[in-house]
Image (cartoon, rainbow, N blue to C red; front, side):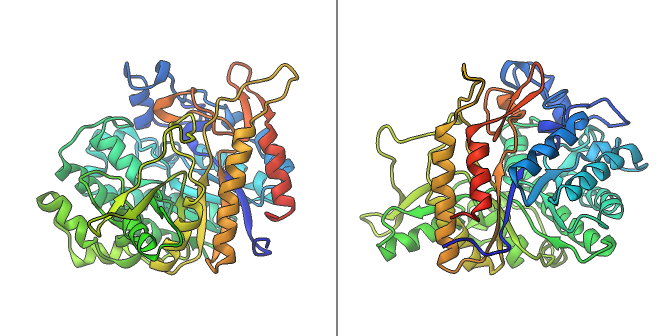
Length: 449
Protein backbone atom coordinates (compact mmCIF):
# COMPACT_ATOMS: atom_id res chain seq x y z
CA UNK A 1 0.00 0.00 0.00
CA UNK A 2 1.06 3.61 -0.51
CA UNK A 3 1.54 6.11 2.28
CA UNK A 4 -1.31 8.47 3.13
CA UNK A 5 -2.20 10.90 0.34
CA UNK A 6 -0.87 13.92 2.25
CA UNK A 7 2.38 12.18 3.25
CA UNK A 8 5.31 14.64 3.19
CA UNK A 9 8.42 13.50 1.35
CA UNK A 10 11.37 15.60 2.37
CA UNK A 11 15.10 15.98 2.75
CA UNK A 12 17.15 17.74 5.41
CA UNK A 13 20.35 19.67 6.09
CA UNK A 14 21.70 21.97 8.81
CA UNK A 15 23.18 25.45 8.92
CA UNK A 16 26.83 24.87 9.84
CA UNK A 17 27.06 21.79 7.63
CA UNK A 18 26.15 23.53 4.37
CA UNK A 19 26.00 27.33 4.62
CA UNK A 20 29.61 28.51 4.82
CA UNK A 21 29.88 32.34 4.83
CA UNK A 22 30.82 32.28 8.50
CA UNK A 23 32.16 35.83 8.47
CA UNK A 24 29.50 37.47 6.32
CA UNK A 25 26.55 39.76 6.98
CA UNK A 26 27.18 40.15 10.69
CA UNK A 27 27.24 36.49 11.70
CA UNK A 28 28.88 35.87 15.05
CA UNK A 29 31.23 33.05 16.01
CA UNK A 30 29.76 29.66 16.91
CA UNK A 31 31.18 26.89 19.07
CA UNK A 32 31.81 24.90 15.89
CA UNK A 33 33.89 27.70 14.41
CA UNK A 34 36.05 27.58 17.52
CA UNK A 35 36.14 23.80 17.96
CA UNK A 36 36.97 22.95 14.35
CA UNK A 37 40.03 25.25 14.39
CA UNK A 38 41.60 23.36 17.29
CA UNK A 39 44.25 20.90 16.19
CA UNK A 40 43.10 17.29 16.11
CA UNK A 41 39.38 17.88 16.55
CA UNK A 42 38.24 17.18 12.99
CA UNK A 43 39.34 14.95 10.13
CA UNK A 44 42.09 16.72 8.19
CA UNK A 45 41.39 19.87 10.19
CA UNK A 46 38.24 20.55 8.17
CA UNK A 47 35.93 23.42 9.12
CA UNK A 48 32.55 24.64 7.91
CA UNK A 49 33.90 28.02 6.80
CA UNK A 50 32.86 27.32 3.20
CA UNK A 51 31.12 23.92 3.40
CA UNK A 52 28.66 23.79 0.45
CA UNK A 53 28.49 27.58 0.10
CA UNK A 54 24.72 27.26 0.42
CA UNK A 55 24.54 30.82 1.75
CA UNK A 56 25.34 32.04 -1.77
CA UNK A 57 23.94 29.08 -3.72
CA UNK A 58 20.61 28.51 -1.97
CA UNK A 59 18.64 29.29 -5.15
CA UNK A 60 20.51 26.60 -7.07
CA UNK A 61 19.98 24.19 -4.18
CA UNK A 62 16.25 24.88 -3.96
CA UNK A 63 16.00 24.34 -7.71
CA UNK A 64 17.51 20.87 -7.17
CA UNK A 65 14.96 20.22 -4.42
CA UNK A 66 12.13 21.27 -6.71
CA UNK A 67 13.37 19.04 -9.52
CA UNK A 68 13.61 16.19 -7.03
CA UNK A 69 9.95 16.73 -6.20
CA UNK A 70 10.38 17.41 -2.47
CA UNK A 71 7.24 18.32 -0.56
CA UNK A 72 9.23 19.62 2.43
CA UNK A 73 12.74 20.71 3.35
CA UNK A 74 14.08 20.61 6.87
CA UNK A 75 16.76 23.23 7.51
CA UNK A 76 18.24 24.78 10.62
CA UNK A 77 18.79 28.40 11.57
CA UNK A 78 22.21 29.51 12.82
CA UNK A 79 21.77 31.19 16.19
CA UNK A 80 24.91 33.36 15.71
CA UNK A 81 23.54 34.69 12.41
CA UNK A 82 20.51 36.04 14.27
CA UNK A 83 22.15 37.09 17.55
CA UNK A 84 25.90 37.41 16.93
CA UNK A 85 26.55 37.75 20.66
CA UNK A 86 23.93 35.13 21.53
CA UNK A 87 21.66 37.72 23.11
CA UNK A 88 20.91 41.40 22.70
CA UNK A 89 20.74 43.12 19.31
CA UNK A 90 19.15 41.16 16.46
CA UNK A 91 21.11 40.97 13.21
CA UNK A 92 18.50 41.68 10.55
CA UNK A 93 20.84 40.62 7.75
CA UNK A 94 20.95 37.14 9.23
CA UNK A 95 17.18 36.97 9.44
CA UNK A 96 16.92 38.24 5.88
CA UNK A 97 18.88 35.26 4.58
CA UNK A 98 16.40 32.80 6.05
CA UNK A 99 13.53 34.95 4.86
CA UNK A 100 14.87 34.70 1.31
CA UNK A 101 15.37 30.96 1.68
CA UNK A 102 11.80 30.48 2.92
CA UNK A 103 10.42 32.54 0.05
CA UNK A 104 12.42 30.49 -2.44
CA UNK A 105 11.13 27.23 -0.92
CA UNK A 106 7.52 28.36 -0.98
CA UNK A 107 7.84 29.56 -4.57
CA UNK A 108 9.06 26.05 -5.42
CA UNK A 109 6.08 24.48 -3.65
CA UNK A 110 8.20 23.16 -0.78
CA UNK A 111 7.03 23.32 2.84
CA UNK A 112 9.75 24.74 5.15
CA UNK A 113 10.46 22.82 8.37
CA UNK A 114 12.66 24.99 10.60
CA UNK A 115 14.98 23.67 13.31
CA UNK A 116 16.07 26.35 15.75
CA UNK A 117 19.12 24.62 17.21
CA UNK A 118 21.32 22.22 15.28
CA UNK A 119 24.39 22.51 17.50
CA UNK A 120 25.86 25.92 16.57
CA UNK A 121 25.61 27.82 19.86
CA UNK A 122 27.11 31.32 19.81
CA UNK A 123 30.63 31.22 21.25
CA UNK A 124 29.83 34.33 23.30
CA UNK A 125 27.27 32.32 25.26
CA UNK A 126 29.52 29.29 25.58
CA UNK A 127 32.09 31.61 27.14
CA UNK A 128 29.52 32.26 29.87
CA UNK A 129 28.90 28.55 30.42
CA UNK A 130 26.64 27.66 27.50
CA UNK A 131 23.99 25.08 28.37
CA UNK A 132 25.44 24.81 31.88
CA UNK A 133 24.33 28.38 32.63
CA UNK A 134 20.93 28.64 34.33
CA UNK A 135 20.00 31.52 32.02
CA UNK A 136 20.52 29.43 28.87
CA UNK A 137 16.79 28.55 28.55
CA UNK A 138 15.95 32.27 28.55
CA UNK A 139 18.65 32.98 25.99
CA UNK A 140 17.16 30.36 23.74
CA UNK A 141 13.61 31.63 24.23
CA UNK A 142 14.64 35.17 23.23
CA UNK A 143 16.41 33.84 20.13
CA UNK A 144 13.33 31.78 19.27
CA UNK A 145 11.08 34.82 19.56
CA UNK A 146 13.27 36.84 17.17
CA UNK A 147 13.13 34.13 14.52
CA UNK A 148 9.45 33.35 14.90
CA UNK A 149 8.44 37.00 14.65
CA UNK A 150 10.26 37.20 11.31
CA UNK A 151 9.40 33.89 9.67
CA UNK A 152 6.18 32.50 11.16
CA UNK A 153 3.95 34.27 8.66
CA UNK A 154 5.35 31.70 6.19
CA UNK A 155 6.82 28.90 8.33
CA UNK A 156 4.32 26.60 10.03
CA UNK A 157 6.48 23.67 11.18
CA UNK A 158 9.07 24.16 13.94
CA UNK A 159 11.53 22.08 15.96
CA UNK A 160 13.43 23.72 18.83
CA UNK A 161 16.21 21.11 19.19
CA UNK A 162 18.00 18.56 17.07
CA UNK A 163 19.52 15.56 18.87
CA UNK A 164 20.31 16.64 22.43
CA UNK A 165 22.01 13.27 22.91
CA UNK A 166 24.70 14.54 20.52
CA UNK A 167 25.18 18.18 21.44
CA UNK A 168 25.03 17.41 25.16
CA UNK A 169 26.70 13.99 25.30
CA UNK A 170 29.22 14.23 22.49
CA UNK A 171 29.86 17.91 23.18
CA UNK A 172 30.05 17.88 26.98
CA UNK A 173 30.93 14.31 28.05
CA UNK A 174 32.96 12.86 25.17
CA UNK A 175 34.68 16.01 23.80
CA UNK A 176 34.10 14.55 20.33
CA UNK A 177 31.98 17.52 19.20
CA UNK A 178 31.81 21.20 20.04
CA UNK A 179 32.29 22.69 22.55
CA UNK A 180 34.74 19.85 23.14
CA UNK A 181 34.28 19.31 26.88
CA UNK A 182 34.84 16.29 29.11
CA UNK A 183 32.78 17.17 32.14
CA UNK A 184 31.66 15.14 35.15
CA UNK A 185 28.25 13.57 34.59
CA UNK A 186 26.73 15.91 37.13
CA UNK A 187 27.58 18.85 34.85
CA UNK A 188 26.62 16.99 31.68
CA UNK A 189 23.16 16.22 33.04
CA UNK A 190 22.76 19.79 34.29
CA UNK A 191 23.51 21.07 30.78
CA UNK A 192 21.01 18.55 29.44
CA UNK A 193 18.35 19.64 31.90
CA UNK A 194 18.81 23.27 30.93
CA UNK A 195 18.59 22.29 27.24
CA UNK A 196 15.29 20.50 27.89
CA UNK A 197 13.92 23.52 29.74
CA UNK A 198 15.10 25.63 26.80
CA UNK A 199 13.13 23.35 24.48
CA UNK A 200 9.98 23.99 26.52
CA UNK A 201 10.55 27.74 26.68
CA UNK A 202 11.13 27.76 22.94
CA UNK A 203 7.79 26.02 22.41
CA UNK A 204 6.17 28.70 24.56
CA UNK A 205 7.83 31.43 22.49
CA UNK A 206 6.70 29.82 19.23
CA UNK A 207 3.09 29.64 20.45
CA UNK A 208 3.22 33.23 21.76
CA UNK A 209 4.66 34.85 18.63
CA UNK A 210 3.54 32.67 15.71
CA UNK A 211 1.52 34.58 13.13
CA UNK A 212 -0.35 31.42 12.10
CA UNK A 213 -1.19 28.21 13.99
CA UNK A 214 2.16 26.51 14.48
CA UNK A 215 2.95 22.80 14.26
CA UNK A 216 5.72 22.14 16.78
CA UNK A 217 7.74 18.96 17.20
CA UNK A 218 11.11 17.67 18.37
CA UNK A 219 13.98 15.82 16.68
CA UNK A 220 15.96 13.66 19.14
CA UNK A 221 18.11 10.69 18.21
CA UNK A 222 15.96 7.58 17.97
CA UNK A 223 17.87 4.96 19.96
CA UNK A 224 15.95 1.95 18.64
CA UNK A 225 15.94 -1.66 19.73
CA UNK A 226 14.11 -4.18 17.57
CA UNK A 227 13.18 -7.80 18.35
CA UNK A 228 15.72 -10.41 17.36
CA UNK A 229 12.74 -12.64 16.56
CA UNK A 230 9.75 -10.46 15.62
CA UNK A 231 7.42 -13.44 15.99
CA UNK A 232 8.43 -13.96 19.61
CA UNK A 233 6.31 -11.71 21.86
CA UNK A 234 8.97 -11.88 24.57
CA UNK A 235 11.58 -10.49 22.17
CA UNK A 236 9.12 -7.78 21.11
CA UNK A 237 8.60 -6.78 24.75
CA UNK A 238 12.37 -6.86 25.30
CA UNK A 239 12.91 -4.58 22.30
CA UNK A 240 10.28 -2.13 23.51
CA UNK A 241 12.03 -2.02 26.88
CA UNK A 242 15.40 -1.62 25.17
CA UNK A 243 14.20 1.32 23.07
CA UNK A 244 13.45 3.42 26.13
CA UNK A 245 15.67 1.97 28.85
CA UNK A 246 18.48 3.90 30.50
CA UNK A 247 20.95 1.07 31.08
CA UNK A 248 24.32 2.80 31.36
CA UNK A 249 25.76 6.15 32.37
CA UNK A 250 26.00 7.56 28.85
CA UNK A 251 23.76 9.66 26.62
CA UNK A 252 22.66 6.93 24.23
CA UNK A 253 19.10 6.27 25.25
CA UNK A 254 15.66 7.50 24.31
CA UNK A 255 13.89 7.62 27.67
CA UNK A 256 15.95 10.35 29.36
CA UNK A 257 15.59 12.74 26.43
CA UNK A 258 12.02 11.90 25.40
CA UNK A 259 9.98 11.03 28.49
CA UNK A 260 10.37 14.50 30.08
CA UNK A 261 9.23 16.17 26.86
CA UNK A 262 6.24 13.94 26.16
CA UNK A 263 5.35 12.51 29.57
CA UNK A 264 6.57 15.22 31.93
CA UNK A 265 8.84 12.97 33.99
CA UNK A 266 12.37 11.65 33.97
CA UNK A 267 12.27 7.83 33.77
CA UNK A 268 12.82 5.89 37.00
CA UNK A 269 15.61 3.75 35.54
CA UNK A 270 17.47 6.92 34.49
CA UNK A 271 17.11 8.40 37.96
CA UNK A 272 18.58 5.16 39.33
CA UNK A 273 21.45 4.85 36.80
CA UNK A 274 22.51 8.51 36.97
CA UNK A 275 21.89 8.59 40.72
CA UNK A 276 23.47 11.50 42.60
CA UNK A 277 24.46 13.13 39.30
CA UNK A 278 20.83 13.96 38.47
CA UNK A 279 20.34 17.73 38.78
CA UNK A 280 17.82 19.13 41.20
CA UNK A 281 14.60 19.95 39.35
CA UNK A 282 11.21 21.32 40.23
CA UNK A 283 7.66 20.56 39.18
CA UNK A 284 7.72 23.88 37.33
CA UNK A 285 10.80 22.72 35.36
CA UNK A 286 9.05 19.55 34.29
CA UNK A 287 5.88 21.38 33.34
CA UNK A 288 7.92 23.71 31.11
CA UNK A 289 9.82 20.84 29.52
CA UNK A 290 6.54 19.07 28.75
CA UNK A 291 4.90 21.92 26.85
CA UNK A 292 2.40 20.14 24.55
CA UNK A 293 3.66 19.28 21.08
CA UNK A 294 1.80 18.55 17.86
CA UNK A 295 3.95 15.73 16.54
CA UNK A 296 6.84 13.45 17.36
CA UNK A 297 9.94 13.81 15.20
CA UNK A 298 12.83 11.38 15.40
CA UNK A 299 16.15 10.77 13.64
CA UNK A 300 16.71 7.07 13.00
CA UNK A 301 19.74 5.61 11.23
CA UNK A 302 20.27 2.27 12.93
CA UNK A 303 18.97 -0.11 15.56
CA UNK A 304 20.15 -2.99 17.69
CA UNK A 305 18.56 -6.45 17.91
CA UNK A 306 17.35 -7.38 21.39
CA UNK A 307 16.09 -10.71 22.71
CA UNK A 308 15.13 -12.39 25.94
CA UNK A 309 18.18 -14.17 27.29
CA UNK A 310 18.45 -17.51 29.00
CA UNK A 311 18.01 -15.83 32.38
CA UNK A 312 14.73 -14.29 31.25
CA UNK A 313 16.13 -10.75 31.01
CA UNK A 314 16.60 -8.65 27.86
CA UNK A 315 19.98 -8.78 26.15
CA UNK A 316 21.49 -7.33 22.99
CA UNK A 317 21.85 -9.97 20.29
CA UNK A 318 25.17 -9.87 18.42
CA UNK A 319 25.39 -9.16 14.72
CA UNK A 320 26.81 -12.05 12.66
CA UNK A 321 30.33 -11.72 11.24
CA UNK A 322 30.51 -9.58 8.12
CA UNK A 323 27.23 -7.82 8.81
CA UNK A 324 26.73 -4.82 6.46
CA UNK A 325 27.76 -1.40 7.74
CA UNK A 326 27.83 2.08 6.26
CA UNK A 327 31.11 3.98 5.97
CA UNK A 328 30.30 5.53 9.37
CA UNK A 329 30.48 1.92 10.68
CA UNK A 330 26.77 2.02 11.51
CA UNK A 331 24.95 -1.30 10.99
CA UNK A 332 22.34 -1.45 8.24
CA UNK A 333 19.14 -2.26 10.11
CA UNK A 334 15.99 -1.34 8.17
CA UNK A 335 13.94 -2.97 10.95
CA UNK A 336 14.64 0.17 13.00
CA UNK A 337 12.28 2.18 10.80
CA UNK A 338 9.43 -0.19 11.56
CA UNK A 339 9.86 -0.80 15.27
CA UNK A 340 11.09 2.68 16.21
CA UNK A 341 8.07 4.60 14.91
CA UNK A 342 5.77 1.87 16.23
CA UNK A 343 7.19 1.95 19.75
CA UNK A 344 7.32 5.76 19.85
CA UNK A 345 3.74 6.11 18.63
CA UNK A 346 2.53 3.60 21.21
CA UNK A 347 4.31 5.35 24.07
CA UNK A 348 3.83 9.02 23.18
CA UNK A 349 0.59 8.86 21.16
CA UNK A 350 1.46 11.54 18.61
CA UNK A 351 1.82 11.54 14.82
CA UNK A 352 5.35 10.61 13.74
CA UNK A 353 7.73 12.31 11.31
CA UNK A 354 11.05 10.64 10.55
CA UNK A 355 13.09 13.84 10.60
CA UNK A 356 16.35 12.17 9.48
CA UNK A 357 17.29 8.87 7.86
CA UNK A 358 20.08 8.06 5.43
CA UNK A 359 23.57 6.64 5.08
CA UNK A 360 27.17 7.63 4.51
CA UNK A 361 28.67 5.99 1.43
CA UNK A 362 31.97 6.06 -0.47
CA UNK A 363 30.64 8.01 -3.45
CA UNK A 364 32.76 9.43 -6.25
CA UNK A 365 32.39 10.83 -9.75
CA UNK A 366 32.57 8.00 -12.28
CA UNK A 367 34.16 8.12 -15.73
CA UNK A 368 30.72 8.62 -17.27
CA UNK A 369 30.30 11.88 -15.33
CA UNK A 370 27.69 10.39 -13.00
CA UNK A 371 27.69 9.29 -9.37
CA UNK A 372 26.50 5.72 -8.89
CA UNK A 373 25.46 4.83 -5.34
CA UNK A 374 23.57 1.51 -5.46
CA UNK A 375 24.24 0.89 -1.77
CA UNK A 376 22.30 4.02 -0.82
CA UNK A 377 19.41 3.01 -3.06
CA UNK A 378 19.28 -0.42 -1.45
CA UNK A 379 19.57 1.13 2.02
CA UNK A 380 16.75 3.61 1.43
CA UNK A 381 14.58 1.01 -0.24
CA UNK A 382 14.78 -1.24 2.81
CA UNK A 383 14.26 1.50 5.37
CA UNK A 384 11.38 3.21 3.55
CA UNK A 385 9.70 -0.18 2.99
CA UNK A 386 9.91 -0.81 6.75
CA UNK A 387 8.38 2.60 7.45
CA UNK A 388 5.65 1.85 4.95
CA UNK A 389 4.92 -1.39 6.80
CA UNK A 390 4.62 0.57 10.06
CA UNK A 391 2.10 2.89 8.37
CA UNK A 392 0.19 -0.12 7.04
CA UNK A 393 0.05 -1.51 10.59
CA UNK A 394 -1.61 1.65 11.85
CA UNK A 395 1.26 3.92 12.91
CA UNK A 396 0.32 7.52 12.12
CA UNK A 397 3.40 8.35 10.03
CA UNK A 398 3.09 11.80 8.46
CA UNK A 399 6.42 12.35 6.71
CA UNK A 400 9.98 11.22 5.96
CA UNK A 401 13.12 13.37 5.57
CA UNK A 402 16.15 11.89 3.88
CA UNK A 403 19.50 12.96 5.29
CA UNK A 404 20.86 14.71 3.42
CA UNK A 405 19.84 16.66 0.37
CA UNK A 406 23.55 17.07 -0.47
CA UNK A 407 26.96 15.97 0.72
CA UNK A 408 28.14 18.28 3.47
CA UNK A 409 30.42 18.92 6.43
CA UNK A 410 29.97 15.87 8.65
CA UNK A 411 31.10 17.49 11.90
CA UNK A 412 34.24 15.88 13.34
CA UNK A 413 34.41 13.61 10.26
CA UNK A 414 34.97 16.69 8.09
CA UNK A 415 34.32 16.02 4.41
CA UNK A 416 35.25 12.32 4.57
CA UNK A 417 31.66 11.05 4.81
CA UNK A 418 29.08 11.62 2.07
CA UNK A 419 25.41 11.40 3.06
CA UNK A 420 23.87 13.33 0.16
CA UNK A 421 21.45 12.61 -2.65
CA UNK A 422 23.46 15.27 -4.50
CA UNK A 423 27.23 14.95 -4.85
CA UNK A 424 29.19 18.10 -4.01
CA UNK A 425 32.61 18.74 -5.51
CA UNK A 426 33.97 20.90 -2.70
CA UNK A 427 36.73 22.43 -4.83
CA UNK A 428 34.37 23.75 -7.51
CA UNK A 429 31.05 23.64 -5.59
CA UNK A 430 29.55 21.77 -8.54
CA UNK A 431 26.39 19.83 -7.64
CA UNK A 432 25.80 16.46 -9.34
CA UNK A 433 22.63 14.48 -8.57
CA UNK A 434 23.47 10.86 -7.73
CA UNK A 435 21.57 7.81 -8.92
CA UNK A 436 19.80 7.81 -5.54
CA UNK A 437 18.46 11.30 -6.28
CA UNK A 438 16.63 9.99 -9.33
CA UNK A 439 15.50 6.87 -7.46
CA UNK A 440 14.06 9.01 -4.64
CA UNK A 441 12.43 11.28 -7.24
CA UNK A 442 10.50 8.25 -8.48
CA UNK A 443 9.59 7.15 -4.94
CA UNK A 444 8.09 10.59 -4.31
CA UNK A 445 6.16 10.53 -7.60
CA UNK A 446 4.67 7.14 -6.68
CA UNK A 447 4.12 8.05 -3.01
CA UNK A 448 6.30 5.17 -1.90
CA UNK A 449 4.80 2.40 -4.03
